[in-house]
Image (cartoon, rainbow, N blue to C red; front, side, top):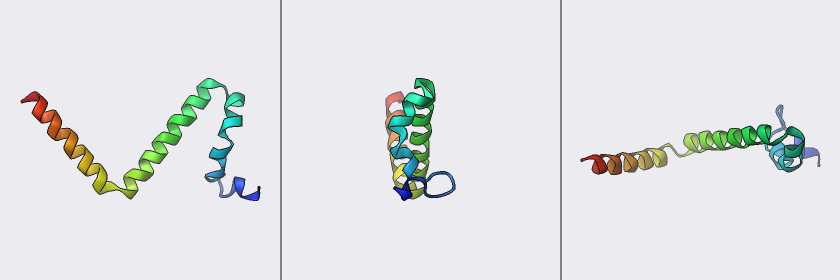
Length: 69
């Protein structure tokens, strides 16, 4: 299990141990950690699939405009 703490910040291996660390941190910190993970994943997907997000936002705007007209 040497790859668990790969990289300067623990890498992706740190996420695998979240289940046991949640109880130690408490519910509030765990919730924050989940939000941070979700945001970082969203940011990564935004970087990887910009065209997909532009398409989704465009669709949302179209439906938004249709609803108000």
